[in-house]
Amino acid sequence: MACRTAILISGSGTNLQAFIDAVAAGNLDLDLCVVFSNKPDAYGLQRAAKAGIPTICIEHGDFESREAFDRAVIAELDRFEPELLVLAGFMRILSSGFVEHYEGKILNIHPALLPKYPGLDTHQRALDAGDEWHGSTVHFVTEELDGGPRILAGRLRIHPGESADELQTRVQAVEHRIYPAAAGLVGSGRVVFRDGDAIIDGKSAAEPVLKTYD
Ligand code: GAR
Image (cartoon, rainbow, N blue to C red; front, side, top):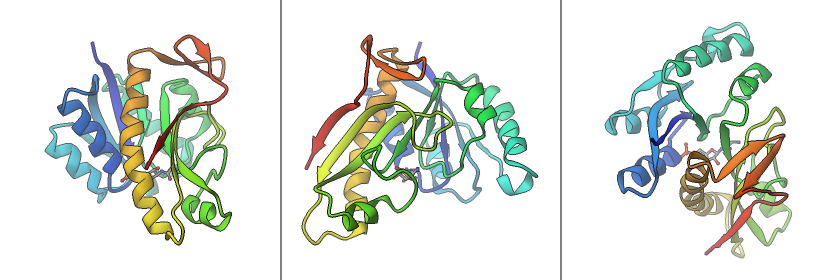
């Protein structure tokens, strides 16, 4: 049976769309059981509805604390019995209670070649540093922001004179390839989280699988 997967978004949801398209094309064996947003106007909610996926929206501003909001999210998500949570542009820091509740079952994609550039403005930071390579990384979520064990990274060469917006567009195209692929590996059990490490095909992975794109 396909792995029951919840996708959490806050915005446009182009990564969500990549999952929807990959499942529809028969290239990804996940059961996309629910899409959650903390923003009612997130366009990704419309993408989910169009694909016939149930949606939930809870606004964090309605809660007194991060913990209270996260408890409400857990209660709603757990009605769908997800086995995997995919953070796809979900712009919230998770409480330790949330991470513990879904330990080893949460994936995130971060638009940088981690451990470089955790946090925001990754594309501009890579340009400012004069980096040769930039990209995006899929990793398991732990309590350390953008710091959990890495699974798969996609890199591309920075073009001379390229703007941050241009770079972001190219990096997002890479994300749409690596994120469904990485989630598929987790969903099928080829990649697991054990004792704080990513285990890929039975081996503890100090470095993520690295793919290079144009
Ligand atoms: C993606 O590029 C993702 O890497 C980034 O948000 C974007 C969401 O785009 N995530 C982060 O910055 C998390 N730290 P999308 O809504 O079009 O999928």
